[in-house]
Image 1 (cartoon, rainbow, N blue to C red):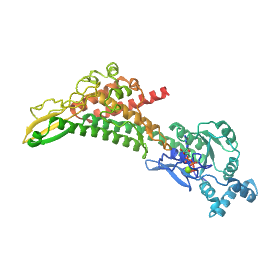
Image 2 (cartoon, rainbow, N blue to C red):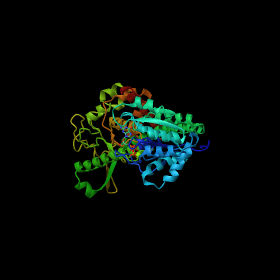
Image 3 (cartoon, protein in one colour):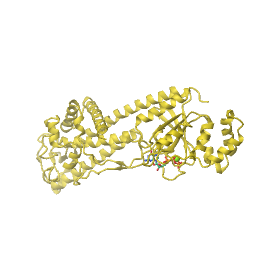
Image 4 (cartoon, rainbow, N blue to C red):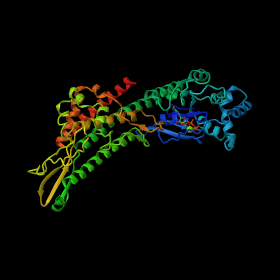
Length: 479
Ligand SMILES: Nc1nc2c(ncn2[C@@H]2O[C@H](COP(=O)(O)OP(=O)(O)OP(=O)(O)O)[C@@H](O)[C@H]2O)c(=O)[nH]1
Ligand SMILES: [Mg+2]
C-alpha cells in the first residue's frame, strides 16, 4: 500500500497508440519521451520523475499498451476464487507470465500497478467507443488501485460523451484531457483530483501543485530577466575595428562599413537565437525546431522592414500616440544607425559617413553608418552602432514576447515545429503607460550609455513581465 510519505506514482496505461506517452511527457515535463504514429512505440515500462528543486514530486510510468486483454482476463477469471483475491490473482498472473513473450506487454504494464502505482487510463475520444476496451478496464479494476481515466483526443471527431459514460462504470474519476493542448491549470487540477482518490497522496499532491505553480511564476520572472538582458545587449551593441595606417589607406569606407554592418547584424541574429534557447531551456524544452522568418537584412520579413514593424504592432504613428514619448519616434526617417559614441578627444573626424547611403524604411536602402575615431599611436578605430532607432527594440521585444508565450503554453508532448510566423497584433496597447515609459527609458539608456545599471535593468525586466501579461491577455481575448 502507499504510505503517507511515499511520493505518488502513476502508471499511464491503455490501448496501444492512444496517447499514453503523450500524457506522460506532458505531466512529467519531459520532451525526450518517444511519441509516434506507429502503435507499439513504447515497448517497456519506464519511470519519469517530475523534479522541482531537486525534489521528486511525483513519478509517471510510461507503459506499452494491452495486447491480449481478453486472454489475460480469462486467465484471471479461471484463477480467482472470490472478489477478495483479485489483486493477488493479478500479481500471480504477472509472476507466472513474466518470461512469456505473448504477455510481455501486459506484464510490463501491470508490474508498476502491483508495486503500488495509481492508474491513469488513457483512451482516444476521437474514435467511437468500443466494448473491446472492457476486458482491459476490468483487469485494471481487479488491481484495486486508485484510478482515473482520461479522454484524450488524437483526431478531430468527438465521441467523448460515449466514452465518458462508459468509463464512468469502471473508473473513480473521468476527465477530458488533451495531452498536447491541455493548459497548465488542467495539469494541476488533474493532480488535485488524484489527491482525492488516495488519502495518502492528498498532501504530497497538494505540495506538488504548489511547487509547480511557484515554478511557473519563477520561470516567468526568469524569462523576463533573460529578455531584458538580451534587449540590453542588442540595443547597446557596437562593432569596432582597429586599423593600421596601411589598412586605413587600402580599405574604402564602404568596405569597412559593410564589414562592420555584417558583424553587427550577425551578432543581433545570434543574440536573438541565444535568448530563444535560454527561454526554451527554462521551460524544459530542449529539442524544439522553430519555423520562423530568419532575420535577413533585405528580406521582406526583415526585422527592420515596415512590414514586420506593422506586424508587431509598432508602427510609427502607433508609437507616437501610445505614449512612448518622443524618443521612440525621433530620428526614424533619418539614419537608423548613426555614430554611437565618441572615441577619445576630437572624435567624429571621419564624420558620419553614410557610406552606402542612408537607411529609409520605405525604400529599404541598405543602412550604414560608420564612425572613424582619432588616430592614436598609429591606429584608428572604426565603429558601427549602437542602433539609434528604438523601434528596433520594439520589434525585438515583440518577437521575444511571442516566442516566450508559445513556449510557456507548450506541453512537453508537443512534437510539431514551433510556428513563429508574425501575427497581426497591437497587443502593446494593453501595456500600461508606466511600463511603456520604463521600456523606452531603458532603450534610450542602451543607446546613449551603451548599457544599463542594475536598477534600470531590474525595472526593464519588470516592465517586460508586464508586457508578458499584456500579451497573455491579448491572446486570451483574441481567440
Ligand atoms: N493531436 C493530438 N495528437 C495526439 C495527442 N496525443 C497523442 N497524439 C498523437 O497520437 C500518436 C500516439 O501517441 P503516443 O503518445 O505515442 O501514444 P501511446 O499510447 O504512447 O502509443 P504506444 O506507445 O505505441 O502504445 C502520436 O502521433 C501523437 O502525436 C493529442 O492530445 N492530440
Ligand atoms: Mg507510448
